[in-house]
Length: 64
Image 1 (tube, helix red, strand yellow):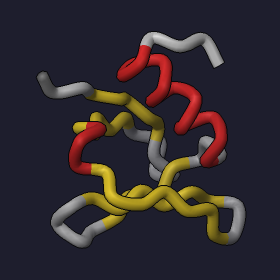
Image 2 (cartoon, one colour):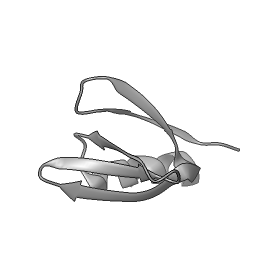
Image 3 (tube, one colour):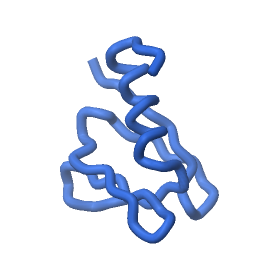
């Protein structure tokens, strides 16, 4: 099963990520970079903690 997460990018567009393809999430200069398995990244506004919380909700059904 593929799990998707939709986030707003810094360019004010929405992007969907396959959670299984995310390799690294890091905060740099007030922007969060999401690196994917192809080595590329997308910058989003949401903090790392918020993204991880949402991923846990999607994958594990947790509330925190």
